[in-house]
Length: 267
Image 1 (cartoon, rainbow, N blue to C red):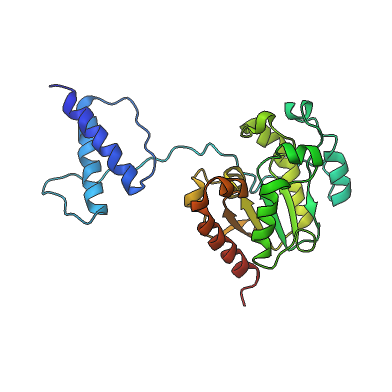
Image 2: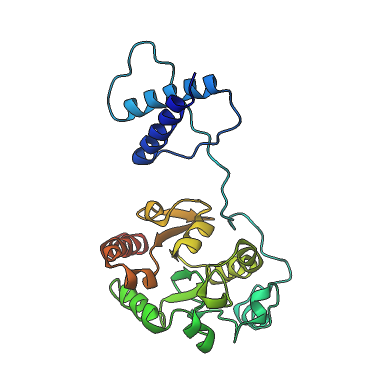
């Protein structure tokens, strides 16, 4: 028997799963006949999801096997015991951090901005060049955009918002943070959340959203819901720098901030 029909079925099956937004599959070494049987089962599942009846004699639908998450989570993890439980000593200690190689190329640690007594904690991704130079998170065009979004729901970084990042030192060339860098820095963020103890957390950008929710899902699919970070309501949204590059996300971001306002002031 030729392999071509099976491979053709496989291509159609995977394309159908993508269109339906189905979960990931893990394929292990299988004989060709077994793979063909699984594909027939998968097609039956696709027809059921689209409301079409399965032909008589089709076997039960194939069950997805989710792949293990690749995104770390700090939910439930304890902050390192040596980290201070008060904000100013914590900040002073962080300024000398050498836990990962990012410390070698930074100008300075970018620890926070805003009030440690804030109602809302905004967690971004990593400092850029402006932040590395100033020592303040979310400055420049992206910071101004964030300020406007917060002002639209009556919030201010000077009065009611605490702002920080997952990563405290700028990655070279503004590249994405690496998993080991996130792991090395997550203790600082964990303790920051404990010390500030905000009413609500807003995760801004993919790395922040995935780390705090513990879900390895695209940001566009994560947003629009209320999560819980160890009992604290958590909302996720796009990074303002991304909004400056893609205006299509402006409306969804506005909706996220309306959701945030409802969480903070339900009445």
